[in-house]
Length: 257
Image (spheres, rainbow, N blue to C red):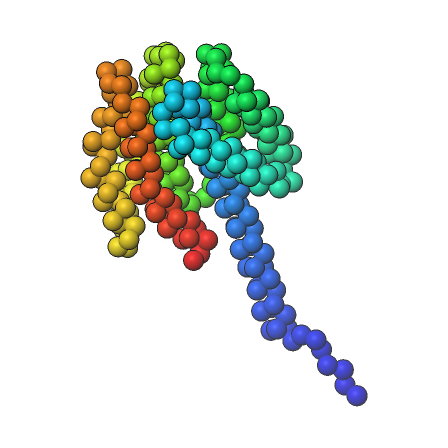
């Protein structure tokens, strides 16, 4: 009796191609998850420090408490995502970022002092630098627009952080320059999304950003002339709602949905 082969050469080739592309797709998803984890830590590093100063100044207390809690949870969750790697260099950086997060948690539990405020500013920059170095390893051209929208949210959080810290006495000229730089970079990113061809729903979000930004920009840049911490906080939230629509749209595209 003649034995049957399990696969014909053609069937074997088809199976091999299927497994290859399935493996590649899974690798792409893992890389996207790592990229988004790093980008989200960048944003959360600014959010928690912003919230820390808002809480100390007793402005938007409930919102600031949520921002602080959500920011800490985001950093911890995304550190765990980034720890899932065989890359030794990334493992070392993630461990360092984890130590930094522990330091931040200790400060938050203590009464406010200007020294603690300075440490929070330093630690937010430390987390940012670490996350930026990791994001570079997972960035590809197809995620350009997703990164653009995430960077815009990050830049708003960054500008607000420096605005509220300035009000708390951290009025070093470099801090003002960092805020101005964040606003300049935000505008450059806004030009990119303005030129992108969106379907109806995300395009409405773009239109809201374009309409509101000229007003919002002046609030942030008034750091040395005006004292509008509540308006700046509300403005940040308002802009981020529109950006969240765009971020979700580009996330789904990156995942192939």
